Image (spheres, rainbow, N blue to C red):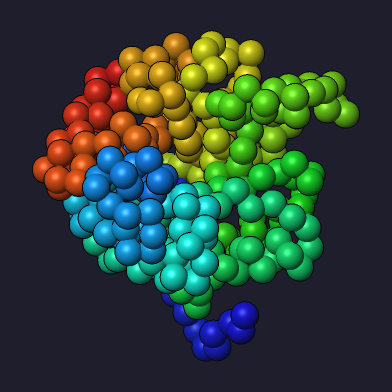
Length: 286
């Protein structure tokens, strides 16, 4: 992907923009997960047309008031080129309405392939240009370097899988690393280094499940945001956040999908559900 020529204004880092959005709109990320069961609940067909109606209704309802929207790329990609075209429109429309877009693609690879993933989601010339991207460090944290560079160049962010809510994650994340701690701790240490000297909030976050219980054995103060899936359908509540994240709870960006999306297709239901969650999170962590 070619770079633009000529002088350019340095982009505002993702962490600064996220901090501002959380202050103005409240601590909430809503996932856009057009799962077949949710399409059916909305009375929509499980096809590209149903996908578009679902996703664009969610954007219309929430993008002007929620801090972050998180499309799950796989649910769009399963419809091939038509689904990707919908994802392009959803990403563009959400950003135009003021939401930050976190592309939930969990990409992880090496070298030129990782660079291509970074260009797809973090380069302004891409039709899928997003504010941030979820990535996997399990080919070695250094394999993410192309995405880190692209994020820094264009004011983007990364959310790196660290302590995920799925039970299978323990097999890798709690394994012992070469330095003596576990793999998750090593990932958190690398993120802390990425965010050093980047107030008020760094651009490189960790994904840490809200369903994991007491995590006081981990230093979650990484200087960046903690994306916390698991609120709602997976069983965690906003009231659980202080017990899970301790002193780092104010850096948490709770992520909710089904808990909000099941209140559709009426836009008022989506908006009311999101607003209640924001107030519940604020009450729990402040």
